[in-house]
Length: 114
Image (cartoon, one colour):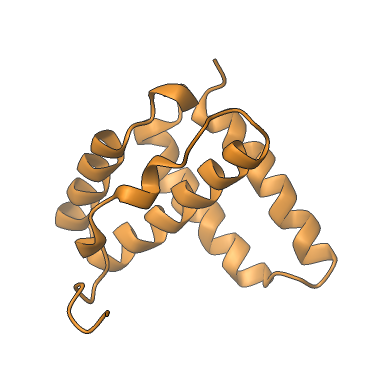
């Protein structure tokens, strides 16, 4: 029943702890925070974790790639995956739907990746 935005807050708190411990770059966390604020939360923040499916994430990232840039879509994919990975570890969902998202979200296509 938890919404993505709530899980994203918990994820950001965990990243802030990692920054304080010197295990994460403050610049990286700021980039993730900006992606959440500008792109991810407006689109999927109110979606319940159990309703966040691979097709939904795929459509969102494809749209973001076309409207903004491949680099923005790749960064947003990392953010969504991070939030959902934490949700899996905490038992809120059984699997991370981002794992099956189209690999062509990245600015460099799947070419060259074994």
